[in-house]
Length: 196
Ligand SMILES: C[S@@+](CC[C@H](N)C(=O)[O-])C[C@H]1O[C@@H](n2cnc3c(N)ncnc32)[C@H](O)[C@@H]1O
Image 1 (tube, rainbow, N blue to C red):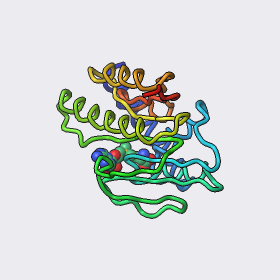
Image 2: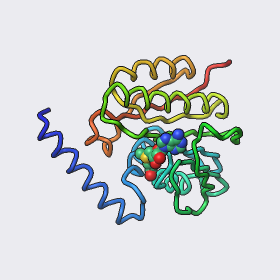
Image 3: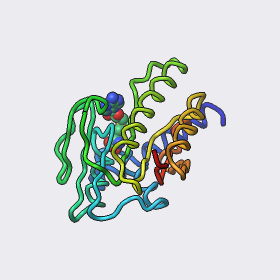
Image 4: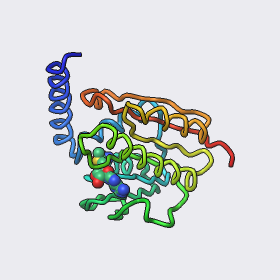
């Protein structure tokens, strides 16, 4: 696709979802990416425990908190502050520095590093975050738990995919329509942890 068409698509998709998010009370248009992944993958059930990594400003946590009612719990973690959300426990800090999590049914990672604009550097930065999120999932997910992680196409994508395939029996790549304007972004849904 020509660069100007890509820019148009990005603006168009962004504007549409930003307006709809505002109307529906979501803090970010990212909320629609999770809703779209859920409509295909049926991620949520009432009563679940959810860990949301890279949660600010809180769109995914808002969706998760609604979906796990009644009886569910959502832990939202970000380096940035998050304005309180009903049904969500918020922790401000680096998720890699938290020593203890509760066992979770679902680990969500919409983590994005600070981008430098230098392709190799950015690929290395997001891979490092995604791998740390994968390690956390291996440790804290229940055996039938699910891990959803944002990834970016490029050299590091195959590395992440093969690590996910070593850790989980089922790995599916999904490009939700709300993510369409962001050309290299995609999501991976991983299920059924392998033993050990
Ligand atoms: C795309 S935003 C998440 C949007 C969110 N899912 C929503 O729906 O509102 C990515 C977030 O990852 C966070 N982040 C990046 N590195 C992190 C780290 N090491 N620990 C915690 N959060 C981190 C950033 O601060 C940023 O807020």
